[in-house]
Length: 237
Image 1 (tube, rainbow, N blue to C red):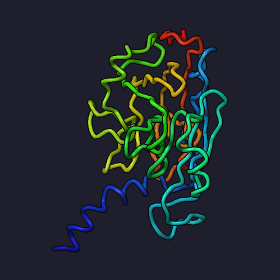
Image 2 (cartoon, rainbow, N blue to C red):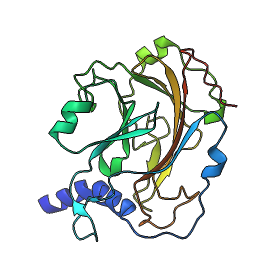
Image 3 (tube, one colour):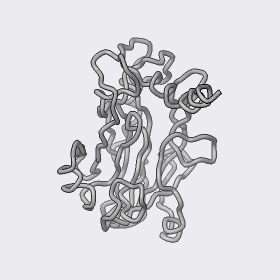
């Protein structure tokens, strides 16, 4: 009975491993072209830690935790946290905006030094994030500072239901991650500017649908817009 309970607890982790195990894909075409609006920055197929694995025996991979990487909106810089020296150099600074952590880098944090489990914990960054259930193009204005201050969102990852803060659903039946459509995140950045973010895909090539649970991942497609004049205007139309 004890063994059965242990296996039951491991099922979600093992299933997530199956969903992200790497192999080739040829079933769907890239749909990233439609993301361009002339104002936003579109990131296509940004590779996460593709060498890691949740399980043993996966060709070319090592069973280990997935290395965190940071991303800076201003210059599209990806910063890897591989060791203690990297952590000391980057994590407690204001030089990054979002962090990709957890299994297959699927858990996203904004830079918030006050939250214990944030990669930047102990730093001086005071970012905040608000979930907006509207299409990215329709989010024209950042929420009030009061809304950012009241937000209890600390991590953006697997959404267990519609009201959860996460950016994707994950099915234990199909073992496939599906990004939630018409979900946008407004962010107050470490430098006080306002931005909006849409996390679109974690599968290589940004396929419109994924039917192969072994599709190569993580390769992130997302887009964002930063209002550099300091206002709350997030119009990208």
